[in-house]
Length: 373
Image 1: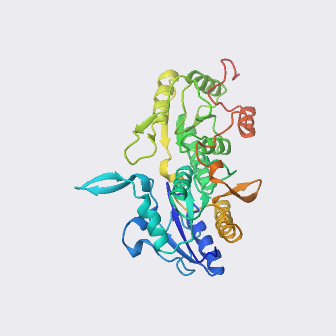
Image 2: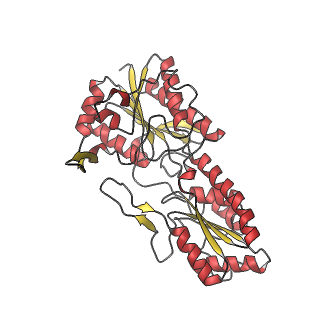
Image 3: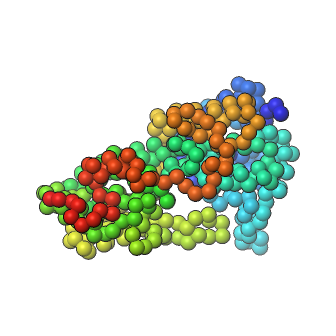
């Protein structure tokens, strides 16, 4: 079936590069003679009867947005159409709005959807296809870089750059005050941000979810460093890092409209335990949403436009649904069955992990006596 009109939306957390993808899809589709319409706030634009929530994205509408952070369409991580919050007597109640969404999609004459998001968004895309949506092309977005089926996601490199710059700044204050600085970065169940920023930012300890850690190993690494006359240290910890005999630290429970429990607090816990056990003055810093904000770095700008144009190309050249993935430096259309369910984490034997160990960095799983003075 010839494509005439497509929709595009962004779901889940924001990431640098979203506007670049939107721009690339709009411009490349315009050259094919297609109309592109944005869906605001995830899928809300299809569920609310407000034409302002469905802007036409012509070349003028997407001019000058590539370098901007965030998304001109808005986004949400509480917009699951199968569990959509509907106000009843002043309170949000969950409702299955998927049929209304699919019906509205068809009524508006859309031939396909380009969905920008991570695992949650791709899972929703798969369910909506089964519910009757004609076609979906996914574009991999998450700063965590943990989406299965693709080597890289846009937004990741910018998040790593932000975290690395923060580590550079914290080195000087840590050294001035002879402190241990514990820096918490995002990533949920994947340690890619912590691993890359930790190596690039000259950390001494990197703690990630894929390698459960012992506090004693961290203490030993810090003691050896201080004994060598280096009277400060940098510890990078992913928000989902776990003790060998414990679970991750959460600050918010999984809710009625929240897909995941809210991680946070591991750096505060570590700073307290390190200070108590070693006597070293210790502070914690949570980078949080700083990693999501701001302009995308050049790599993410280029990647976003490659993926956006590839989405249009696959809509033109194939009749399949799937994810526009990066594999071996090239784009591929990967079936959603290879993408949804689980995450792509760091392998404990990944070359980057081996590189960090060879440089003397601690992952918290080392046996006693590993770090020599």
